[in-house]
Amino acid sequence: MVRRFSKYHKQGIATDLLSFYLYRVKQLLILCLVFSSFRTTAQQAATYSELLRIASEINLNDSLLLTSLDKSMSPVDTITVKKWFSQVLSGSQNSKLKNRDFFLAGKITSNENFDLYILVEDKKKADTSVMQVVHLVTTKKDGHYIASFKAAITGSKKKSSYNTYSWLYKGFNIVQDSKITTSTASLADVTQYKINNTGRFIMSSNY
Image (cartoon, rainbow, N blue to C red; front, side, top):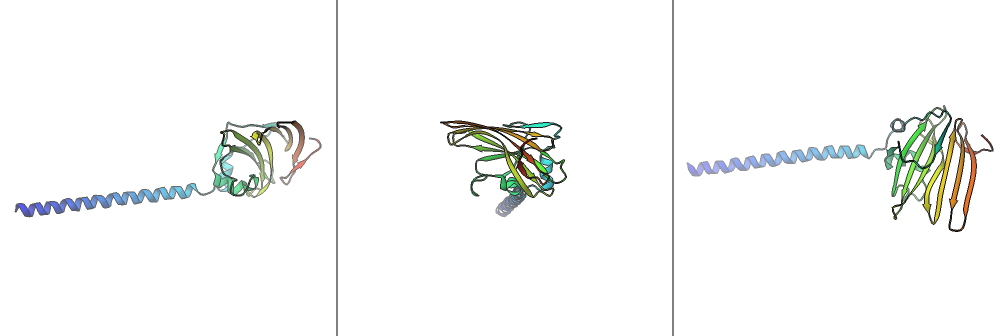
């Protein structure tokens, strides 16, 4: 009786261990499925309606200074940037998104023909320095790209220092002040532009 009881007892322990093992495997499978679902969702680019919600609306009552920005910006993942703003980025196809962070500083949707986005691009260098480019990007009301304009550039590249900023005025007029300093010269220029009714940036003689 003792031996038989011991045998059944061992069988019971083995059965319990097997049940516990299967239970843990089931839990791990569920966790893997949930993680996979989250990962798939995270890898999907934002829809255009979601993009509109990400960027806060700017009421352009008078003017807006576009310069080096570090506050009130919404981060944008690279997959969304690639879908909606790939034409904006400089560099080869493989390096467009490398070592860069992107943010939306706001949008203006008051024009009936186009939407205007302020896209900020931080380019990280190996020496930990950062070059920041503030892009003005126009899209059609369905999100299709129209044109872009580098409104502000701050930082250094190839022994040249850039300090360019722009004023965006009501009526979509732009005045850009550019300063570039190299090891041998310093250049400065003021140029005027206008966003026409089709969303394109054109040089203007006055505003």
